[in-house]
Length: 268
Ligand code: MG
Image (cartoon, rainbow, N blue to C red; front, side, top):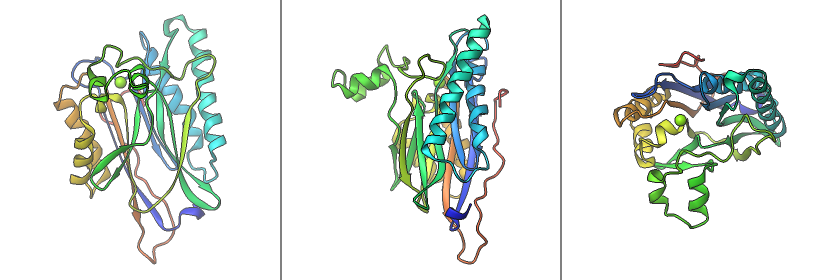
């Protein structure tokens, strides 16, 4: 990728069904330039199918070095349309949907930028100076109540509406996806996760675990998932860690990422 000659990506992925659910309806994609998590919902196999369709559509961007925000948004719209069409064709999965969030490396004005995208209440964090900064805005009833000043942020986690998402793929009309554009810098570390992580592990602990595993994105992803399962594992939990490293000065230009590994999933 010519725009990113000085950057090397190190990527880790991990997923677990948790301690309560019988199937893992999360799906993950971690192949350059796109890193994403989808958290499916719906009866029967609907949730699993919806998240798998979303990730399969995004996979069409793998290997491309010319992704723009328009390309990304169009692909997300196509994913939504594919889920809607499938749900209409098959009564068993009627009403299925999924969240979709992640980061995609693209070029703006000739320099590398991350496109941070989101529909639903899965999240992207940037780990910075020992803190986990949430880059995405949750599309959920509780997030909207907090934003409106109706409830305190501290009460959001125990609120009865905490699981209600206000935007998801599988909707007609299509949901509006958020896209934020941030310059890509050496040292950026992102955590992309389903709510199975964030309902079990406080933001401060997410940052701590990543920094304790700063030498390995895979170890960081596995440690985060293990922490969520140990804390109760009441939902499927999926994590992608993307760490940008400076390449050695004379190294040949390349962005490299290992093959994604998922544990406890049978839908990817
Ligand atoms: Mg979930």
